[in-house]
Image (cartoon, rainbow over all chains, first blue to last red; front, side, top):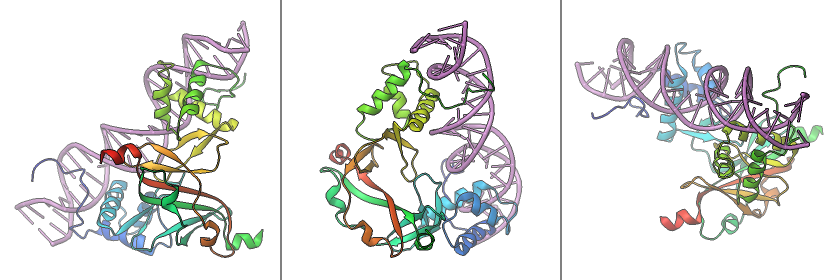
Length: 136
Length: 136
DNA sequence: GTCGTTGCAAAGCGTTTGCAGCCTA
DNA sequence: TAGGCTGCAAACGCTTTGCAACGAC
């Protein structure tokens, strides 16, 4: 093949112990994880794993459609398995947990200025979840 | 004076050319700006300005309540004047600029689950701005 | 003159990339 | 075996910090 490929995103052609460990960690998680969390957990299976391998695999899994990024404002990127239905997130200011919110507000296209092309949107709700509202 | 203060957040006690330029840039903007954008624009007034000065002033202006942070998912922090009317943001995927979007979609409270208390929300729209839509 | 503020350069920090060796298919 | 994949370390880009000089009040 022609040219340098060292930095290229992997094609997921081989089933390595590292990749398997990363997938297992994400499958076992009950919420989206950050790269560091994934590394720490995956090292319980493959102690020699490096952070670069995590990043490279996240990128490859993302590209293959297996993974999905959760990007909350002011927080680091987290990763969760793809394939969930369209939803948004509710972040509880009391307990810090993040919840999924099904559905979408109406009239999105109307508030976008004329001439602009809307491709995607991301909503975040902040407040207190059911548990924390009860307490207050 | 006791101890080292070099890294401390300024108290905005003096009216310097740099600070004036930064404020003017932010006042003139039609959307939230990133540190680099602010530096580039402010250098038209004070060419010698360094990026550290921008960061220090942003921090100070933020702390004084004059500025407000816009934290878009997956992007670096941007800054806009505090006290604006309620609005959201449109991020152009072609040119990277961010625009204000007046108004708000309908039916926000309805999609939040029962028992949850909604205090605040943050919406982001992604696509192409007027200029970049024309080009395509 | 004081001392808040600035520019420069170096240090951090999380993420990416170059490279040589490893190991799956 | 070939070449996709990995670990290590250096490189990056963005932000912060140390320090001496500057300049607003």
